Image 1 (cartoon, helix red, strand yellow):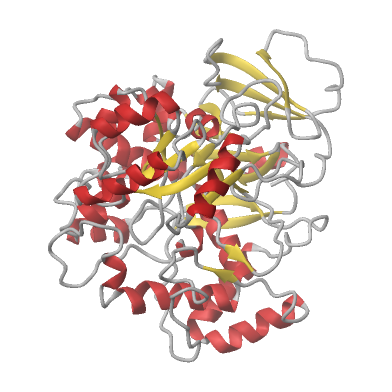
Image 2 (image 1 turned 180 degrees about the vertical axis):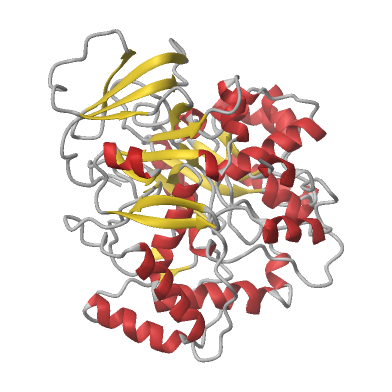
Length: 510
């Protein structure tokens, strides 16, 4: 997200958790943010401000809140995040490989056809909904953008594969499909050598035979400092031992792994070998609502299955500075440091330890989210203080209200209110053909209509995915923005995770 200049410089005060090695915390700190949305200085409140901030807008977060870098979700499939958790009827044993569960007879009617219908009928409304869902969970950048039928600037979270930071050059590539052929491997190797990052699903499942995918990458020279392997659940210590000397990172998605396979990445082995570990929420049919939720899954698994191997600070780094470093954005995001972009998350202070505070924070604790200095979501007072653009109320959950910024007349596609987004998606659920007609008309014709293509290979109609008939598809209720009773009840009913996720509800008791 790189919108217009801020109306004025911005000053944010509060307890800063910087993730900057030189000074990781500033209890009474100040961030000075210029009109480009970059942090000019990080200082103590007693330090005189730099020049040019005499007329700045001022956001005082208060003694009962903490300011962190925005969360970076390094693995997702955002087009699917209107859908609820999926439980395959009658399934009692975990799958062992990624290509198995899409073949379940319930997958087509419950996942593939609904997501295709939503994306075909009104892709813009889908993107607005799922990006809002991410921001509600403190996410400011997310991987897993779907293919779009025309250029889409967006307005909210940074879509990692499309983000250029105003340079016009994309620096992060990804592939959901397996790399095949000498030319494809050579092209990928060349892009890594040129400094681009490459994010790739690797050895997803528990079948030991999946480790052959690692061997293929090794043989073709793909393991490199900016190679990012998603899941890696079939890899073992010997793989990390061979990988680590060449650099690279892994993305851990414990909820989705446990939900589908009953097991997750051997992060203990990865850590022992010095691998950089990041977190990803994956997608809503088998994952967390957002990265804020995935932090709790990681904490639960770490406590119950790893004996507390990772500190709370370690877990927080997996959601902030680690993913930024993994894709080569260490000079742009992931820390509160001069020269970086002002992607911020402000949450209520409920714990003395600032890292445990972030791990245990839930959506009702989120006070403010800014991206490039823009207040995108939060409580009304902080949004107003930061000069939020076209703020509007949003009922996040029963009894939980916030303010969100979805519209800006200076940006072409920032033109839907939250009410319009929800109404458009509910229209698809009730009458998908008519909803598509309305969306095309609102866009000014089919050539301007934003259609999405789901990024999973088995759902892409242009590959081997199904052709959806909007007249007959059935779409369930939109997934809630936050973890709720229905979500936890679904977790309790599921058997594939073997109880490993059953303690999650306790994190949300207030």
